Picture: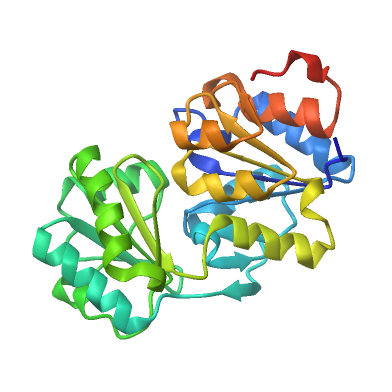
Length: 276
């Protein structure tokens, strides 16, 4: 196995426990990796300002890969890469959610835009991710600038399962659509995904992908764990990522990130104890 020079981890369901916190053990292990000279960053579907507090907590200096790879931005605010959706395409997508009566929100300029704040989907989202949105009513469906990402939140997981292939078939290679949480339908430009965002960062750092470790739990993490030299899925993750990953770690509530870093990056634990 090659040495690990760069580690990228998803946040929700991976680095964060069920309470949305970074455990003491995960934090300690990550800081040990950074101190040893290993690059470390976050690779998340979250918006930049929602991911930034965790980067600051861990002492991350590398660019954060956010919006599922649609933006690479340094913790100091410098944007290295940004690929928003085509404006016309975004309007087509928004009309689908409006017609179906499915909650949808948009992100532009690292601002969250919502139609109405008095709905459960929005209230639960703000509680989970620690951000509030700007309420713009029906203007949501007629954006004036290209959004970085659209996020649909369905009432049932089954509805999200149906929407992803429907949107994918209707728009083809014009869009990248995936699920993060079981009822989250995430839509970005077709040139965007976490794997491509991670590859851009690795290129900037002059690190071969064989020396990259990627960790995740959701369907939107499958691409990055597949292209990394070491791809690690959490035991609590979706079946798709557990099948695609090189290794399956303990759950996010059992310090799965620390488990992987100790074995494959720091090598302070024997690899013979790997979970298969």
